[in-house]
Image (cartoon, rainbow, N blue to C red; front, side, top):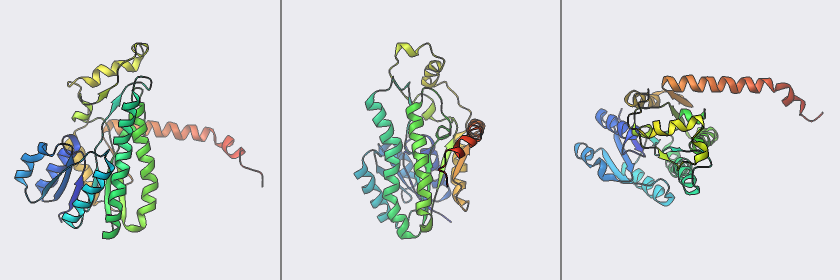
Length: 277
């Protein structure tokens, strides 16, 4: 059975691959991106099933307009894919206030406002599925990516609450947690903060040059990852999270195990701070 999809951030990477695969199998896609002309070639191949819309997810009014028009055009949208986002590399001291704002406006506020715009429509149609692109960086953290991690940990917390709020409406959501993948996201497209001399000698700074090079080759296969993202929509109930990549599994498993061990070590302290009966 074919589905209708709305996907943000479709100019490249996961969003572009997902759009292509869905069209190939017969689905209909509303694809949003800042420069729709980048998908005109694809639209000419699927004129009745690919609908393009210009969208900057940091523009809340535009988000609502695009969402309303998409539902008005298709009548029903089965799956919303909140994919637009980017990474910011630099120590907390190195990133500018403008870069902080842009990172959070795009990865957090933009995703939240997209969800807020689609919820009335999903409720009205009796349900739907939301896929939110997070990252293994929503469960683990690395030096030099503090603002990126802030955005992903924030959106994960938002969805942990949201899925409980909307469950009775038949709306489900999955946080997608890929490891490093062979897309432009981790191969030269990351925004780099202006280095501060004091941080040039610290170990993590060496990753700055690696991430900036197009030759950096992560382990994750984006085609295989997109295949699993699409497949998870057929799983009922929806998985709360979907880990993709051996690095994601390994690093998140270690981080969660360590966090649980630290919590257990504090059990007696935690219990001792309850008020007396």
